[in-house]
Every structure is written in C-alpha cells, then in structure tokens.
Length: 243
Image (tube, rainbow, N blue to C red; front, side):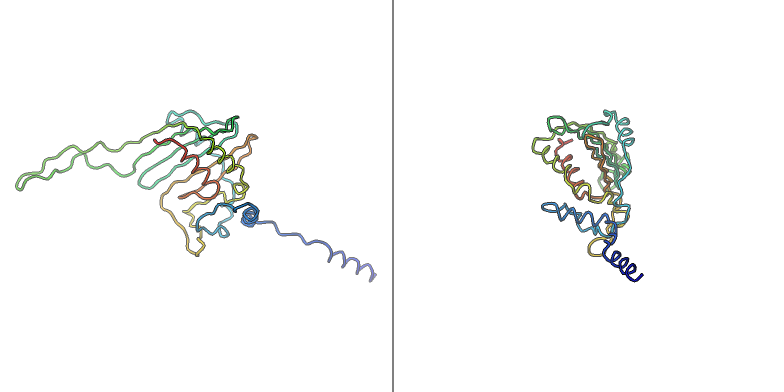
C-alpha cells in the first residue's frame, strides 16, 4: 500500500504542470523578441493594458467598400487574389472617407486603385459680406466665394519595384499577425506613463490583408497608424500620385 502511494506521489511530482495559455500580449512580445530588429512600435501606448477586444480581428467591411464605390461611381472592389483592402472614414470639422484596393500581380508588382471623398462640416460663410465703406456711408454687400462642396477623387497607381518588394516584406512579417487588431483612441487606452490617450473625431482606418488562399488578417486603427499595419497603409498612400 505504501509503495503504491509512494509511486502515485512520484508520478504526480514528475508530471509536467499545465502551462497557462499565452496571452495575446505575451505572444506579441515573443514574436518581437524573435524578429530581427523587433516589431514596429505603437508609440507611447501601453499594449499590456489594452482591453481584450483590442486583440480581436474586426469583422469584414466588404459591404462598406462596395457601398462607397457604388455611391461615387468607382469600380467595385476586387474579391479574389492576393490583395490589401483599406477603408477609412471620419473627421471632426470635415468628413473624409475612402476605399483603396492594392492587388499583387503575377509579376510581383502591387497595383492600386481607390476613391476618396471630402466634405466640410463647417457651415459655409454667409452669401454676402460687408465691404468696408468710407465714413458716413453704408457698407455695400458683395458676393462671397462659392461655399465648399463635397469632392470625389478617383485614382489608379502602380507601386515601384522597390515599394512592391517592401510591401511583400511587410505582408509577410510575423509581427502583422501578432500585433493588436484594434487600437481605438476614443476608448482611452493607457500610455506607458499611466495617462490615457484620447482623440476627438479623427479617422478610423481598417486594413484587410488577403493572401492567395483567401486567408484574412485585419486591423482597425483610430487617430493614428501603428505597427506593421500602419506601415502597410502608409506605403500604399505615399506611393499614390497627388490628387
């Protein structure tokens, strides 16, 4: 009996303990440590204190791309092939929105097409203004400039060989899969110094990355661009021709 009890105890002691599941932040730290040069940072945001939903993949926004493009007369977004889809909207005293698709061709070159809109939320000035008049005379009303109206811009462009190679590297980075999927400043995330970040208005950008087998990675960022996702969006935008 004693031998049986002793054997059971020895087996329990030798049995490996079940490890606690790795948290998303711990996984991000591990990937950062293994990646040469580390993963791109998120400014002064404290990723360890992000809420759990910040690590959750946002839902698809294909319907939003389709609606915006239909409204502005742009071509429908692609739905197959290796591609990046970028959707943004928001503003404070102005409203901006846009849809960009960047598709990788068989030649390794990324080609982009997109549409963006702009509309001022600030009320237009009065239709007449008072022009200064000589003393003793009434000021004469003069027409004001035409009030600002919504504008639409449609563009197509091709990334250079160098930018295409850089895009390939960003899309293949393990940091993209490991980093937070939702950084929204109106939720007041904590900074490293203990204060809370906040942004009034601002633009919300959703990036979706599809590989050739339709596997999807996505992230949403508000009032800024961080990490690999932010670098992908920046590269797509900076390679575009001026409006």
